[in-house]
Amino acid sequence: MRGLRMAYGDVIVLEDVDLTVSEGEVVALTGVNGVGKSTLLSCLAGFRQPAAGTVSVLGGPPRDTAEFWRSVAIVADQPTWYPGLTVRELLELVRMTHRPLPGWCVPVDDLIEIFGLTARADASPLSLSSGQRQRLSLAAALARPSGLLLLDEPEQSRDVGFRYELATLLRAEYAANDGTVVMATHDNEFALTAGARVIELSDGRIADPGAPGAPGTAGEAELGDAGPGGEPGERAVARADQSGRDR
Image (tube, rainbow, N blue to C red; front, side, top):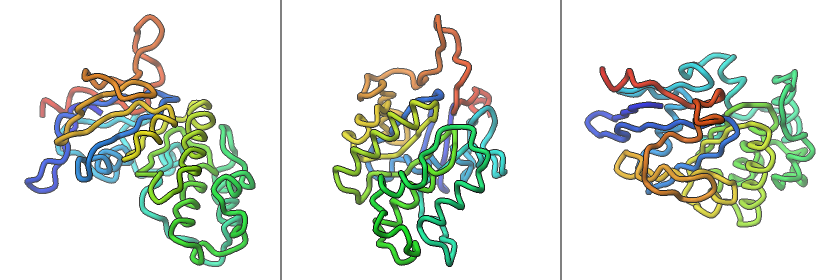
């Protein structure tokens, strides 16, 4: 995204935000509540249209099409659960509807174990606790292949052990297989365990563009877009051009 401006009425939420994220990178958006982290994710998903600036995801603007959502997965609000399906059947359905499976994704049985749902695998999602449903939402996003994973506070209401396991999964499996993660979080330790570039938002702007795996120093928020020899990388995932600034 380049020159992104987002407002709700007269309230400016994001102002002049530049951000480029490369394939295989994990980026963590941090900052106090209301600073614009979730709004930025919504712009990447195409749920909200910016007042100015441009957003490009996987080579084009975010769009509500089957092609776009085959490549992008988001975990924010809980989805509507299919009635009559068990936890296992739901994950198998998600996997089945995304065949063929050209890329990396976690087998259903492994997901059930990783997300602590073994004892509830044959239960209806509606019978799960709120925490278990949150875990199921994350599991469903990883049951299918995707190139970009958008997560809104994935560590919320989860114990320390599970946070570590999830962060490791994002770094060592999803990103290592060329998947890109952009997430909003309040947990810097979780972000660092995930090997994330930590991006701090303050007053609607990028206060610190970060560095891979650790909070960085202030500078331009062009993240991981350089290829060998400093040439532009071929696999930028979230990029924008300058045209929006001149409107």
